[in-house]
Length: 437
Ligand code: PLP
Image (cartoon, rainbow, N blue to C red; front, top):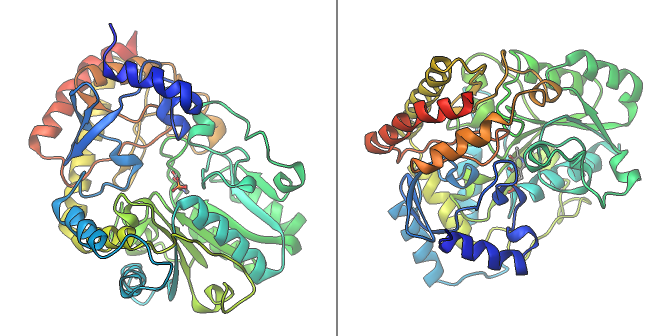
């Protein structure tokens, strides 16, 4: 039987490579037809055939407040009525930059003085790396296996997210000399980091790290790992780029850095990157840091970066409205909802005797079909990932839309009310049974 989703997918495959504009959307690792979304509201999406699902994808993170929050939509509509794009500065950009700098602060610790707005997380990390190279005059970059920082050339080596889902080693089309500028190390392994600096220290511009990894499934940093990265980088005159594209403004008002700082793990990254929540569902991302670093960017400094749509007024309006609405109560309700679903997920799989863990980093969590929480990508890849397809489709049949890959985090929002949560919790036992088979 085909429905409108099948019809759209068939048509899409004729005109869009693989039928999708971002690979993981294709359901490649779980099979079946992607749901073509016609609308979304609060905790729910409605597909092309008119079927509703409780959504735990949340646009892969941005929808912290739920979909189509009336005040966010209203702010975007009001901005649209004043003009879609000017290619000139606006006051609202200044307000958003200020808000970002003020929010990412814990006590006296304040890593951000200046902010540059861009349009995607990929642009933010790409520019952050160029900036680190420009500041240090060095070329090499350390990244961790399984970490995804977007799809720019040097960052696709052993990346997570779609690269993990599709079991790709990296990407075709990346010239070897560019890939050779990235040293890929095992995550949570400080000895490997120290060794890399012993051998290449003079040439390493920066370490880039996901504040907490969430693109090889959720794999939290070991206590002290992020702080030690800052120390090692700084000892050797390199910078630490903390990638908060996924975690920023989602797990805590000041991001994962803020969550750690508020729990006593204090360190100062040199550049932070943001995306997703900061744009409230519109294309907007940012890089930020101390003025002495950020001022190397053009037009003040020699590191070039630009964008026709950078600081787009509709995106800025969505970001400002979202951050202003993201109160401590919002974070508390997302934390509670996430804990309830994570606990119920674990209990359902335990009841069916399925070997699993539910790793967590703040309100981020996912499932891994492993006996212990993995510390790195090599271990995450050894899991019984085939179990996820049956689990995923059982949930989908029960009207719950999960990320279509075991290597992605599940996202709760402040709009997941009792009714929505009950639908998720009720669906878990049958999905766990399906995973057990
Ligand atoms: N960095 C991290 C940690 C991400 O999770 C992502 C996207 O998922 C990116 C960077 C890239 O962001 P974008 O997809 O907006 O280019």
